View 1: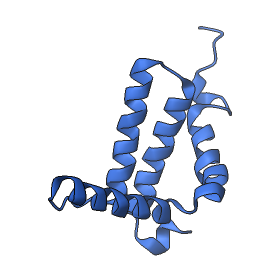
View 2: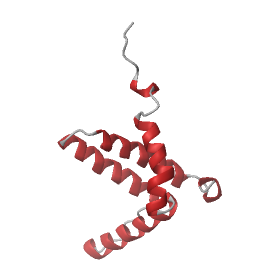
View 3: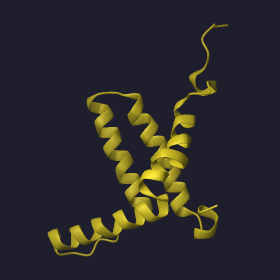
View 4: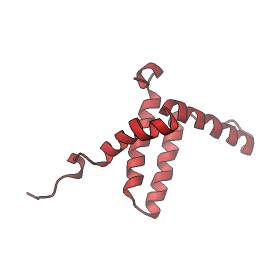
Length: 106
């Protein structure tokens, strides 16, 4: 058996860091994920309509998914733990924005 500790079992792993950011620092700076991603979705939708002349419905969940893709692209260029933490955070936000509003804000 290896003396190495599975990183997923450490108390400072990527998931723990993402939870702390989503429910702490980022929430304090940017507001609740529902509010932030809903506003971003509306802005992206307006931009796409103006730019391409077509209505593309963008949901708060779409915002989370596209943000994850951006972090994946950045990580392909230069792997960093921060990218993985943000991907985990956006995945949590995708779950939050998919819940009924009263459950998501608990």
